[in-house]
Image 1 (cartoon, rainbow, N blue to C red):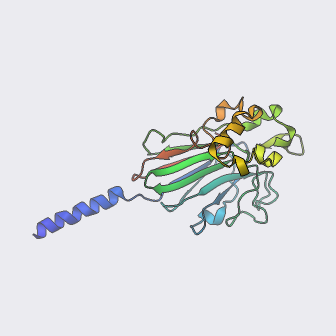
Image 2: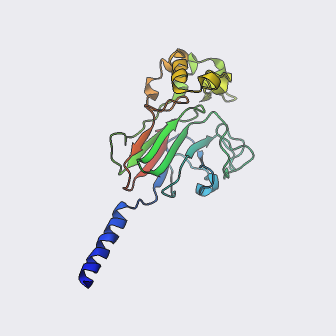
Image 3: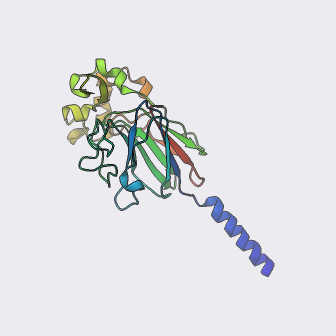
Amino acid sequence: MKLQLFIYQIILLINYFYFVKGDPQLTIINNCPYSIWPAYQVGAGQSLPNNGGSGELKKGNVFSFKVPSKTSALRIWARTGCNKDAKGCATGECIGKGIQCAGIGGEPPLSLAEFTFGTPSGDFYDVSLVDGFNLPISIEPKGGKGPKCKTIKGCDLRKLASQLPGKMVKKDRNGNVIAILSPCEAFNDNALCCRGQWNNPNSCHLVYKNYDIYLKENRECSQQYLYAYDDEKATFVCNPGGNVNYNIKFCP
């Protein structure tokens, strides 16, 4: 009887370690030819990594951290052109904050890596350009499985600057293109923002299907979330249960 109980306890212990998902590790890689200042935001009531921001990450450097396995609505972005205290940034600044954004989101336009971990269906992740674009981002899952558990390759919307309306293009004082505003941010139009009567998948898709000036040359960004409801092709998921870590590379 004691032997049976011991075996049963061993089986429970094995099952615990096999099925309980550990905290995922996120590794931020700066492949840009200049420094960035990583920043983070999560859903309400959750543990905020590094109180919302990290210090200067110089070109070629790497920064890793773990988040609780049930973290949802995690957003990661990079601030660029900042002072040492992460103020006065050219893009992505947390207005009124410094290195640690303390839950404040970045000022658009900015590219976002988004994650929700530990759902019954697995980890969900995407690269969102709904709030505009400031840097190319790739997300590479490490150790995951499944047909939608894939690397999201980086793409650079700045290449389209010459084809876009001037209101969508943000330049620095030297005239260099540093970011692209979303159509919604640039024009504050209900249709382009998928608001009001356009606040449903069918209407929103139709608006952007006809908005050729933004999308016709944008095949290289086919894995990115470009506008609200653009989730059919742009949301990826890795297997539930097992431990999956993720590399987030800026300027891949």
